[in-house]
Length: 593
Ligand SMILES: [Zn+2]
Image (tube, rainbow, N blue to C red; front, side, top):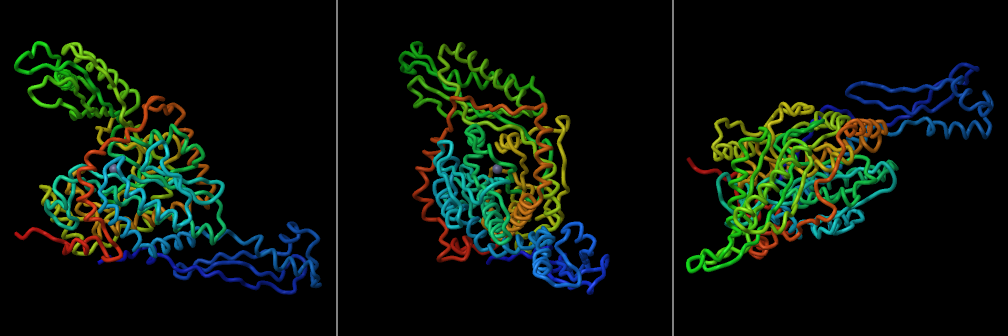
C-alpha cells in the first residue's frame, strides 16, 4: 500500500484567509478615508499585516482624483481600483502551501512514475520505454516536447509557459548493468538474473521534477505568474555522456536557473564546489594482425597486447598521481578466440580528477601511455574516442539557501516500522557495522568542499550545466544510507514506500523552490550575481571536442538480450496498485534468522 506523507508544513502553518477591512470615517483631510484594505490573517501565529492608507498618502499618490465628503464617479472608481493597485502579490507562503498541496494530490502519480521507470530498468542511451512514458505524461500536461535533442533518441526538452524567468528541471533516467532486483526484498533476488536494473535509483528523479513542475504550472495559471518551465532528462548519466552535448548545442542558452534532483538517503542541498571528481571517459582502440596463435604466432601482432600493456602502464603510473584521482577501465574488446591473434582490441577508461586542468593532464598521460603500448606491441592506435565527460560540480549558493529553507519546512518523510525494518535488514545484508536504518534528522546545509579536503569520488555531468547556468542539486531520501552504490542493494528500496515518500518530499521542496524562483526576482538576480563570480576565474570549456558525437549505440546489445524478458515485468498500474503488489511481494521481505 502507498503511505501518504504528512508534511510538517501542514503542522507549522496556519491558513491564510484573505480579508478586506473597512477602515476609517467620513474623514477630514489628514484623517482616514473610507478604504477597503486588503490584509491577511495567519491564525496560529496571530500575525496580522494591516495596511491603512491615510488620506495624505492617497493625496500624494493620486492627486486630485479623490474629493472628500462628496461621492462622485471618480472617487467611486478609486474605491474599487485602489485596493487592487496596492494589493500585494499573493504571499509566497500561501503559494508554497498551494505547491505542497498540489504535490500531495499527485502522490499516486509519483508512486506510479517511480514504480513504472523502475520496472523498465533501462540502461543509458536505451531508455526508450522510459522516455516515451515520461514524454506522454508531459504532453498530457500541456508541455511542448522536442524529442531527440542533440541527436540522442531518448533525450528531449519539454517546455511550458512564456517569457522570463526560464527555469529548467532535470534528473537522470538510466539504470545499472546486472543490478536487477526484486524491490522490498532484503537479500539478492534478481527479477531476471544478469539483467540491468535501477541499482542506483535513477527511476525516482523524474517523478520529483514532473510533479513539481505540474504543481507550479497550475499555480502560474491561477495566479497569472509569468515564466517558462523546462524539463529535460539526464540520459546515460552513468556514462556521463549527454549533458555536455546539451550545453554545446545551446539547450541552456536562455535558461536562468536549473534545479537538478538526484536520489539520496537524506533531503539535502549543498553550495559551492561539491565533493567528488570531474571525469573524461575515453575508449582506446588498437589494431594488429591476425595469425594462427600456435602455428605461426610470430606472424601476428596482438592488439590485446597493446591493451594489456596500456593497463600495465597506467597501473604503474598510479603511484605518482595526486591522491584525489580515480582511474578505472574495462576491456570492451579483447579479441575473438584464443587461437587467433587478436587483430582488434579496445579498452575504456574513466579518468577522474578534481578540476578541468588535472583531468586534461590525465588525458595527456593516457594518450602517451596508449602510444607507448602501440609501439611496444607493434600495433597501431586507431582511435581515441571520447564517450563522455563531466565537469566537477559547483552549486549556486543563493538558490541552495532558498532551497534549504524549504527543506526545513518539508522535513524528512515519516518512516513507518516496515520502512525501517527493510532499511536495517538491507544495511545488515550489505555487511555494515552500523545498522542505523533510515535517517530521522536532516543534514545541514553544507558549503564548498575545498580541494584540500576533497579526496575525490563520483561524478555527474550536471557539472557541465552547473558551469553554464546557476544550478543546484536537490538530494531526496528515496534510498537507504550506507550502501555500496551501483549495486543490486541500492535497488531494493527503489520501488517501495521509502522511494515513494522520498520522491514526494523531494517534489515538495522542488515545487516550493520554483515558487521562490518565479516570484522572487531578487533570488534570480542574486543567483546570477553568484554565478558571475563563480565563473570569473574558472571559465567553462567543454572536454568534448567539436567533432565528438554522443555514443548512442552504447548498451544496445545488452538491452537487446534482455528486453523481451524484461517486458513481462513492466508495471501495469491499471491492474495493480503498486509494483510490489504486481510482483506479489510482502513488504518488507526479510531473511528469517
Ligand atoms: Zn546518479
